[in-house]
Image (cartoon, rainbow, N blue to C red; front, top):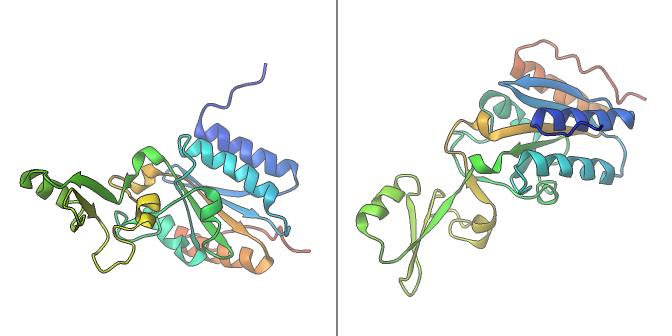
Length: 223
């Protein structure tokens, strides 16, 4: 009987096994019990990797699949230090499905997969006639305030008023923040490299961030 894959750890192990079957080595280190995976993918066709990673993201996010975030590798040190690439860690972030996340970060690409239930939206929408006491309480976490033209609604945001995304459809679709421990919210971090120089750059950053000199990633992309 095939064993059911019921935990994040099992799902990540299965993901690594699938890549190994394709001849793709995966370097892994756990930081605060959160897996950090480095995947060398020199093939121009990203579709097989994307499909596999999309399945992992769907599981790790808790079924929503829409709390993935990709950034450039120069933010990797912050992720290793804090569990999130923004500082402070409760700053607004923008997340989405994996295909949207893949539009950002360049190469090497750092993908953070967050547990959806441990993120909150970067805004709240309240009725315009809400009491001042309620409004003041929400404003502690959402200090920026917008009123609808008809006065029926109030939009409160963690973004500064000068940010053009504040109160926008983009914030509505993608804006989140982490109210608790970012390491609890971060289910997995995946770094994808596509060249030997990507691999070397990632190794150097990880060495510095982890305090291990050097982090020996080998050279799986040579040749």
